Amino acid sequence: MPTDLAIGIHDLSFSTTSLVLGHDELSRHNGTDIAKYHKGIGQRAMSVPTADEDIVTMAAAAAAPIVQRHTADRIRTLVLATETSIDQSKAAGIYVHSLLGLPPQVRVVEVKQACYGATAGLQFATALVHRDPAQQVLVIASDVSRYDLDSPGEATQGAAAAALLVSADPALIEIDRPSGLFTSDIMDFWRPNYRSTALVNGKESVTAYLEAVEGAWRDYNAQGGLPLEEFRAFCYHQPYTRMAFKAHRRLLEACGVQPDDAAVESAIAATTGYNETVGNSYTASMYLALAALLDSGSELTGQSLGLFSYGSGSVAEFLAGRLRPGYREHLRGDAHREAVSKRRAIDYGTYRELHERTLPTDGGWHDLPHQTQGPFRLAGLRDHQRIYETA
Ligand code: HMG
Image 1 (cartoon, helix red, strand yellow):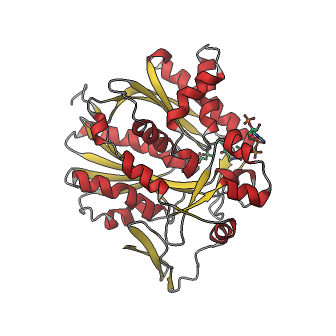
Image 2 (image 1 turned 90 degrees about the vertical axis):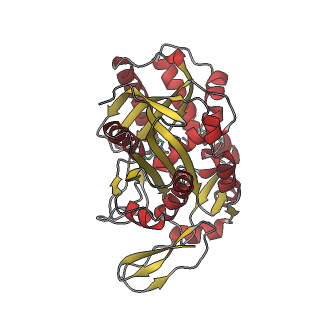
């Protein structure tokens, strides 16, 4: 069994929805000072799915360019992490498997632990690749973040999917050992099966997140991880981008460093560009922060990055990754910027209508309007089944 084999992220691609609601439009409706959105929580817009978009269509759209570039020849496992499940039994990834035309010799499984799920998927994937370095694992994070209308969480909604190809000798990032873990049984954010919107104790969730930053970092140190000064950059889970600022400040404090606001700001600036306009994409959020950093143009070869993944409830992990030589040749910055910029702006009324819309539950035959600009769509429902197609 190889022990010093480099394993990590070989390719990274994300997709989002076809529609976008600006926070300026939301603030016109609810009278909130726009500075609270732009500065207080660090958000400018949120991705909104059309009637025929969901976690499956976003996941397939995120992963399709990866399969196109690398083929599916070495992929043996597809892990889809989500907290926006569409079925209590069947894994959403099986629809994605079908839309991508993957061979039957690929196992598919869904994992859940709030926003943390994809990082669990990444760790499971590295273990599978360690066991058989010839294999690759496709890990997809896909979520639609939904809170009640006119609630404090509303301004942090969003949607996106991030797909990672995990492989030996990765082109982008080697995932290092050890990692730091922190689990705590708390009710900061949850969504009972009968609800389509999350319940949240907002302020408590912020405190819980920050405690988890410190807890995971302390465990990382206890496991013999790198010291703070070895890290060139940090990507945090970003339920709203200002949270990354709070998180980094807390990490510095935990290391006994007196944080200076300007320094904290500049440490996370390159990681927030996508999330401030996409909103919270739950499982995908930290990977959009990573994509923003990689696409920012900085030269990071050989440098270590700190990745902090948090899922309410809660489980958190701090892990380190090292940028591989030549990684910049494999990035997808143009496609990512296009995914964000091509979204169609909608007004508050259209957003509200989409938010209030629920899929019929009568098991009948319902066609959905063709609204997506993406490559895949949810065409409708028949006999309690979801019907997907190439758009
Ligand atoms: P709120 O009550 O709307 O806002 O809730 P606030 O009054 O706390 O204000 C927010 C910030 O804006 C404050 O700054 C204000 O001072 C500032 P802070 O004290 O935080 O530094 N502010 C202004 N700034 C400039 N100009 C102004 C102005 N007014 C106020 N005029 C809250 C905020 C985050 C609680 C809410 O949005 C919420 O409930 N969000 C959902 C929960 C959430 O995102 N929690 C984050 C941690 S938990 C997590 O990350 C997990 C999660 O992703 C789910 C999962 O794991 O599955 C959510």
